[in-house]
Image (cartoon, rainbow, N blue to C red; front, top):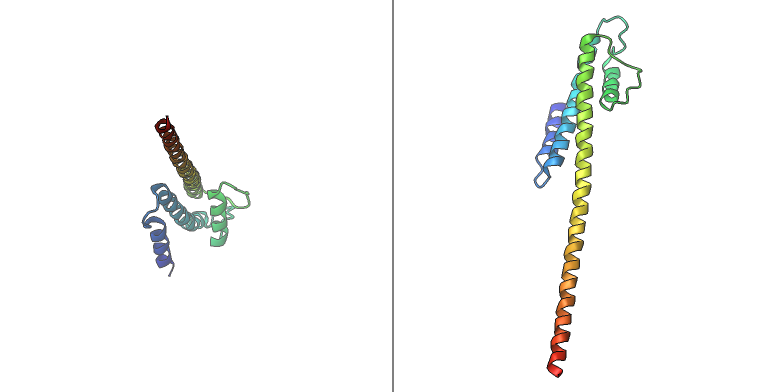
Length: 148
């Protein structure tokens, strides 16, 4: 069931017609982050298994740790103690930082594009209003010229 759900979620994020490239990239990065956090949690438990002082001893704890790590919150309640656990942590951190940067950039781009469309529409309306005024002025001037 889960692989089918993940496949459908990725299709929804990436394959929508009309969705801009930056939103597709942010959606793809978010999907990659989810997979990295899920697999990273499993890899951290595997790397830490049997290590002295290990506190990532179950998948739920490791999943919480990967969420903390990806978001760079890092409460310090869970952390890897083995070299391989730290490698997994590094991957989760880099993917998390990159993903949140891409999502932030996509949102900023969306807001800027929306504002530019609004400004362009207002600019077009202003130009159209000026043309109508000039047309009325030309008619007034032409009308007064006929009277004299």
